[in-house]
Length: 87
Image (tube, rainbow, N blue to C red; front, side, top):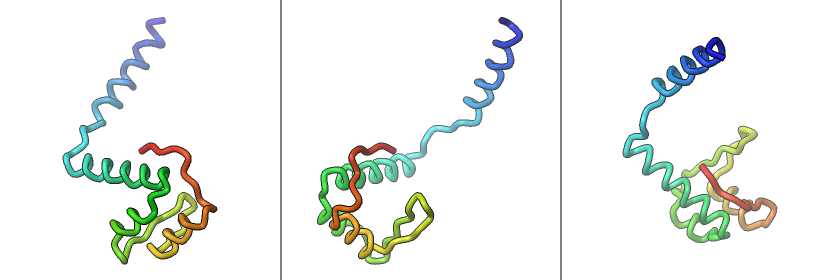
């Protein structure tokens, strides 16, 4: 048991030592991202259109880029639905 526990403990402590707390700026970005996802889940597309800059670009999980106009059109189309949110 000790032979397994010691390396595990060492790896765990190493991982913890490399992690850092979020800065205030990172917290603001994460909170904004969470709010955007909440609006997407609630289908509040008008609110999203209001806050996104005209030069807004979203990158999909497949690496494809969409402009604000394209992304808003996709959300309004009903072909893209967020059922849950989480960051």
